[in-house]
Length: 119
Image 1 (cartoon, rainbow, N blue to C red):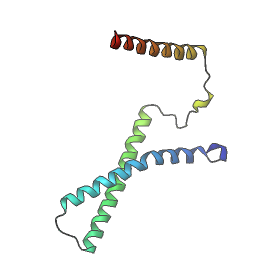
Image 2 (spheres, rainbow, N blue to C red):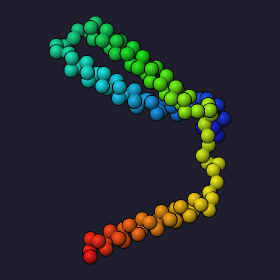
Image 3 (cartoon, rainbow, N blue to C red):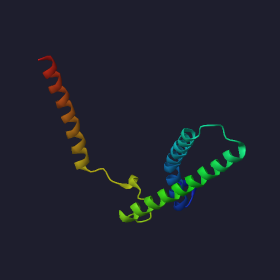
Image 4 (cartoon, rainbow, N blue to C red):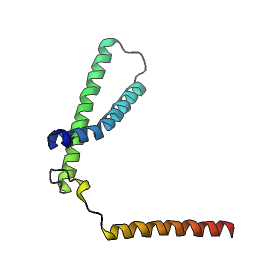
């Protein structure tokens, strides 16, 4: 989004919103399920609207509280307020050595596993 000259603040806000929208949907689903479990008879329209308004306000309060907890957690972990770009990291010899060692280890484990199963 930075290529489109959109400010970083809006990019970060969109990213966080995208991450938490699914949590809000899940929370709303659980609230609706709990309401259905507590309701015995069919409600008239006025009571249903009151209940819906109560659920929506409760959902906004929960979202605000979750946002505050996330903000405090980020602040306590030393979040500097700007996104670090991982695309500027360099690939070093030790990275190649680690990848090669890892693949050799995986091949070794599979070959030993094959010998133990057939031998």
